Length: 227
Image (cartoon, rainbow, N blue to C red):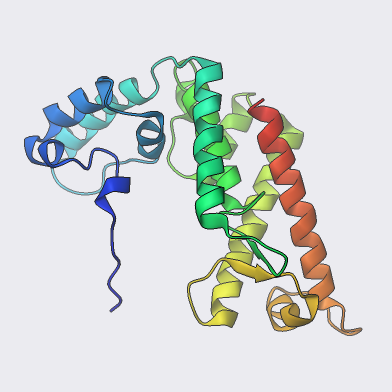
């Protein structure tokens, strides 16, 4: 079994006092100035997992009221854009030889951050968008009329494509990676596993073309909706 290291500094409410003091401390933390936007953002996907269900349910309701309190739209958008840029700069590591399909330009994190931004911005009045998970969030945002059918379709299709690509990439590479070569010739095995026809040897090129088109659409939508 592989051990997974967890950086507590990147976990919402990870300070020692909050961990020890229980439910009341968690509520106070989120309610106070010490809970930053990224911490509230991470809690969008929180849900009851184990323990006393009554306590968990009550805590979740209280937490949601605090997470989804009314946000100033401009400040919220600036925070989300700033966090996204920092993540891309520090972890994207894209260059002339590779893309990062998760943390790079137009990658999975663009879609996740965009969905969470819209949930935080509109969750105060649209209770049905208070759902965990990106797919669930996109569907809820569409049903509430926050995302247009066209925007929803682009983001939904892109998310499914990128998730499948991430899974197949890690199978082919036999390691946990999000880096995609820009050399179409090196993508043939991956493209074939993705289901691309390779009768004429163009599977790698077609995969690369679809990825580049998808990432452009995602980043364009991210910038437009957070403008």
